[in-house]
Length: 241
Length: 241
Ligand SMILES: [Ca+2]
Ligand SMILES: [Ca+2]
Ligand SMILES: [Ca+2]
Ligand SMILES: [Ca+2]
Image (cartoon, rainbow over all chains, first blue to last red; front, side, top):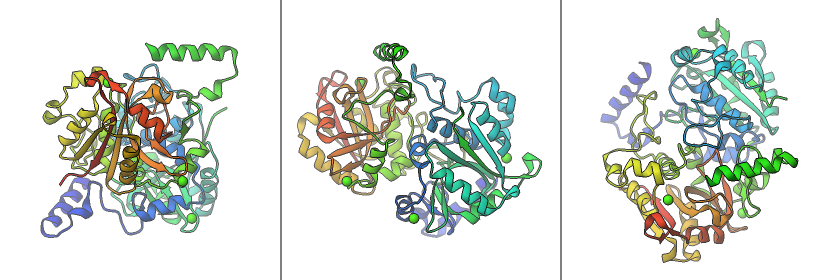
């Protein structure tokens, strides 16, 4: 409801203002975020200090299938980037790849039932559980249990190492976006501006953005009512044995 | 059938050879192609001389839905990159974006019926027609009507200009891949090696590759029996009025 009324507000504003081009297809970004699709955003990537995750993830970039599937889309990208053995899918036999349908099986159902996921999405802890269901190593970190410095240090180390990934779970409105809890993978870090690149899987809604480390940390350091009010946070991911 | 027997052959070979890691999830590349996922491939992009198309297309990268949907996936990427007004889709309302389902409407049906597409895919001329159905300007060029130099000049100009795209239709086996006609967008050009970057939409099968301009031209300059034996080729795309 919030989203619809926000869009309606924007459209109403545009009837009297020349703001067509600024709206485009995705929502406008707040001043604190830099779109990867902008000249500045592309330059930050070309000049970024840690971007090992960018290459494999950008090749596996997908759009979340529904508005509660951000976690599924994110995990699918990471599993494909890690080249975890995947099932096939109708139409691509005999080839294999994870998608947002064949991701689910009895092991994932044991962690999170699909009707619950479809209704409210997944929590930080469930991201860890679902990765574990595919024998991928997941180190789940609630933001409230550490600090900004610890997050920055660990995330930069992971983004600078091949075969390692960082998934973030954050409250959008804290970084000025519409509006609730969200999940996406990180792709890069720029030291000069202290910004992380989020490959936002809601590609119909927002482009990938460069966000200040402190702002992202603040957005992760928020209580999640779907997770017993534990704080959101991040998951450090590496291939299993 | 060809694909299955090829994979079986590979698997059989691997029973006696230590080639597990080299096979991975996608098919092995011939020596003449450089994967964007390799260190060399990433370096070519960072040092490429024309890459305007890369940024918007990489943000819209999708996997073809079935083995005959390479053309649909390619056009969807280009329409989204151009920010052509799009329909919504179940699960993402009120937002909008093209996908490989909502792309079809009465105007596309007038150019290519879905059952035919599902069976044999689309031809070069139909790419142009389908883009036209969305009021996008498409200049269809059969490879046999021009030469390598003309292709290189035009494609490099388009890849170096924001809001312009190049779609290629080529015979895979000519560049050493398995095996038939294929369609994908170009994303960049590297002058030092005279190579184009193909963002291959069959992500379950091959990574994006850097291919020599002459090899790509040769693969486009092949007769398509689904198109009255006219040669394959490329489509130069710009936004409509
Ligand atoms: Ca930098
Ligand atoms: Ca939630
Ligand atoms: Ca170069
Ligand atoms: Ca064909």
